Length: 437
Image (tube, rainbow, N blue to C red; front, side, top):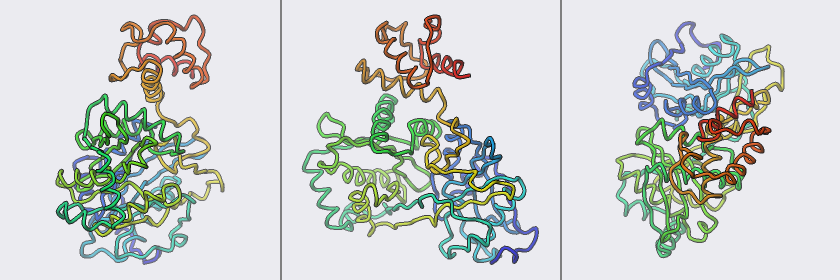
């Protein structure tokens, strides 16, 4: 169906403002993606202030697709609306024209680009029966971002059947890992999460990964509650690897992880994926999403993931596309696939200030400082008393202030060094914000 074939008034964007309604609709889609969940939208708003807007695209009052857009006014650019891994399509019902992709994408473009003069970016899931549309005829063009791909493992068969279905290489790797005495555990302990975030941030920087940031992991953990948990792999008393599993409807996703240098030789990643499959099965889920396939940076691990395919399916989004209002100057928007690790692929030259909240940056910095400089392994939250508790002495405070000056490009004057400014991470964040303004 081409753009001009649509019957006027039959397609519509309908706002969805109730979480229960959104969750119910999302459960009817062929693939429930984490980035289209209510919790993910709220987590991004907590991190960087992009406003989640949820819309149902309907045809003659029949629900067809869902799109959670992250919207922000960008200086020098105007309104930007971004759909991460969406729109997602509901199971087609009677009376809906086929293919549906053209109608849904055109409706979104008309609502946002023509109706609100917004720059619209999306990376859609296509209905299984639809072919890739003629993007330029629909008013979109490729944005140049890497297309997301991953593997979903069906965890419903018996554990013995699942393991037997793996390739011989995968089974050998698991047997090796088990012979090394690796063990796994699941945790929701705040102290374990704090330690994981410190290690994950170091791992992320060492590997050059931009997503997800510790701030996003922490915000999503808060939003999802019991649906998020840590999967930890140990050899004896040494923790080798950690990952966050987030559940959305019938699917668990390995969302973030870190691994020590010894993990490769111990086959710890392969062991972790097997334990994640068993954990998803234990929770009564249908799928485990392995969290992406990256042939360029992680060829060995990607090959292992493909060895799970007899019990699953590989998928890849068709790409990322954008439509801009006619007034938008060419080259005004730039993609750097970062935005501080919160919105992959949503970096804009005009929004360098849109980073993690200062409070999250300070909290991560204090957690790392206490762990690495003071060997503190206890929980760290925004209101932990650093000075009045005796945790940080005068020499340690000077070292912490030096890090704050370097991190935030500040000059701390002698008159600034008062208890109200440095006793808690929250107070430090308030001080830094005041200095920056």
